Length: 205
Ligand SMILES: N[C@@H](CCC(=O)N[C@@H](CS)C(=O)NCC(=O)O)C(=O)O
Image 1 (cartoon, rainbow, N blue to C red):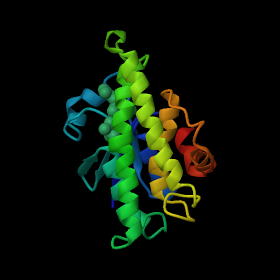
Image 2: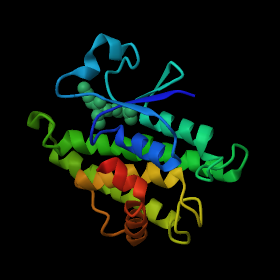
Image 3: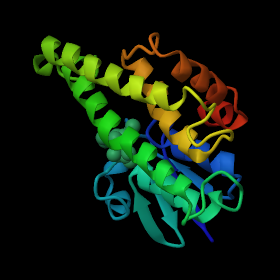
Image 4: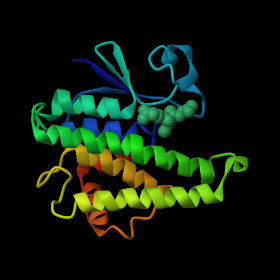
């Protein structure tokens, strides 16, 4: 199977790169220069009409949206490698729940927070009360994650999986956006376990 990842350094593509490294899946990587606008060129828009990274081209067919790519990688390669639950197992349902939650629910709130206060957003769009409210929402979500991790080291139990990688990447990014994990000791300890993995170090180096 031929896999080509279109990526950019320190971007939404980095968790996908981390998953490919963790799974030890052979692939080619094409690095785009986002500042130069590579992602808006017609040949790239033909793969991903949204003009963003990542895109994974699988035997000539493009797959876009980081969460879809990583869930697919789990299905295709993770089960054999013990890093993603089998299709008919209860853990598969749990893995889909938490990984989709972190991109859709937690990630949606994070986008609201960034719009309301990020340096990279036009200050005329900033909204301090919305930022404060959204930080409260994110904290409540982290409390739910903390509870999930209170009696197990990893999201699915005793063993690390792609579910941890996917959720941890978004939570880690959120700390750079001003979200505090200080009140969530289980989340802190679990993130440290993630940061210690070779795949994390390689993907972010
Ligand atoms: N929902 C998309 C978001 C992708 C995204 O926003 N990528 C950014 C990099 S972090 C990008 O390519 N930005 C370039 C641009 O907007 O022109 C995903 O998860 O794949």
